[in-house]
Amino acid sequence: MIRPAPTHGLSEAPFPPDLFTVAPQVALALPQRADLLPATDDEPDHRLAHRARLRERFMQGGAAAMPDYELLELLLCRALPRGDVKPLAKRLLTTFGDLNRVMAAPPSRLAEVKGVGNSVVEQIKIMEALGHRMARAKVIQKPVLSSWDALLDYLRTAMSHQGTERFRVLYLDRKNVLIADEELAEGTVDHVPVYPREVLKRALALDASAMILVHNHPSGDPTPSEADISMTYAIRDAAEVFGIVLHDHLIVGKAQELSFRSEGLL
Image (cartoon, rainbow, N blue to C red):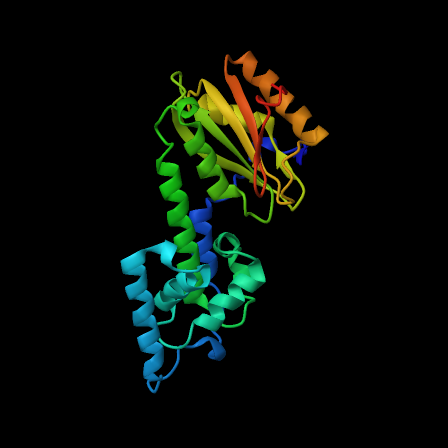
């Protein structure tokens, strides 16, 4: 649910840092613990053989040939060159529910899982960032309205498993090509503050001609609240003053998305 931000100090409200720069910095700050150190040199040969079999099966059959916990094992092997990582892979999946949620988990939550140290957090957040960048590459600098399915895939990857509400704006040029994709606010589990003035200020700075608003509902239900609807209209009306078109507002849930345009709300 989007809630209007306080009216005082709007021009001084800082934008939150980009996820890709925050995660590694947070991960590096995690304390070292003796129980998270790699195994010793007398590691049994069967663990090395198990890792070799995993790599061989992946190279021969790809991801389809492996369950999620084995894919996660391969990733953890990069972070923990020695030791048995299968229990840790299964523990992560049990804790967070599935592979997507493991990748999207905040560094602080990952660090609470027994066996997770700095190197594991770094590897997981790097893989999450790579996934986001790959999905984003399919839509950036391309006409968004004719690449709608790719856009939805990107937004699902980036937002559907976040534990807090995030608000972002896709800024488009006169040909509806995506020129900027910016996360402008992060909130709590059920609301995010939005500054219409900052949304428009950034649009003017980019010389954008159109926008698409996007936010997620961690609850999984993409149904818009009254606050979501009223804030959307406030941004639309302000944008019209400057000749900027609001194409849509997308709400990303766990398994589906809701489009204000498709629902007749815009």
